[in-house]
Image (tube, helix red, strand yellow):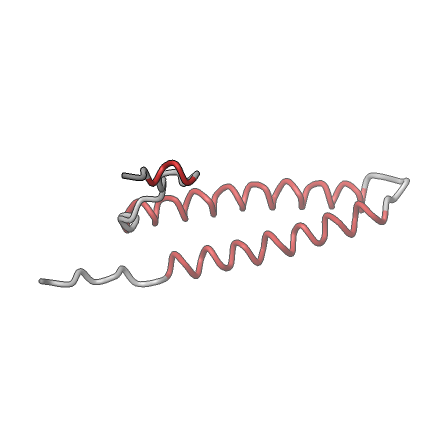
Length: 92
């Protein structure tokens, strides 16, 4: 009898159970808070480059602007995910 593990197959570590709705909601809220804090940090860096720093680094300014836009898009996606209605439980 051949063992399946001999074929360099590792057991699956994925959980087939869907994430609990409340857990998923909490995770989305946590990710949104972290993205919001990161966006504020990047916005502060951008403001510093634009207002305080006399030796303007255009590469840094462009990068910060792109980061702010990317984080805004991520936050809009997370808000959209949070706005989705709770899935209904199917009765068997």
